[in-house]
Length: 82
Image 1 (spheres, rainbow, N blue to C red):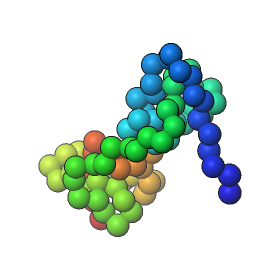
Image 2 (image 1 turned 120 degrees about the horizontal axis):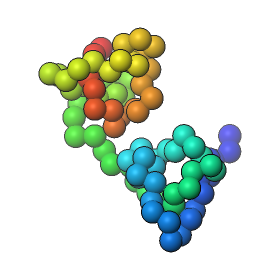
Image 3 (image 1 turned 90 degrees about the horizontal axis):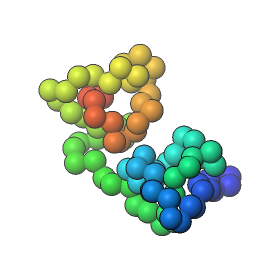
Image 4 (image 1 turned 90 degrees about the vertical axis):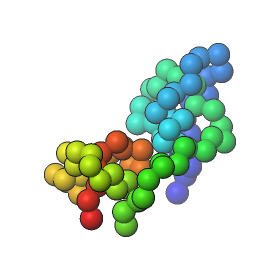
């Protein structure tokens, strides 16, 4: 399995999504800088068995409730019931 490579564009603004998640859905098409060796910020909440945030009191993640997966992963602002 090959490691995904994201474009490094020194001098351009950093990709905020990449900095939060360590991933970028635009991959090579993204116009922003993707610095090497970043560590995505850890969510400050409990995670369910799928690694998604449990946020009691927040709305249920619409994508998760419909498909059982979440596009935003551990950085999602919604609740992911178990």
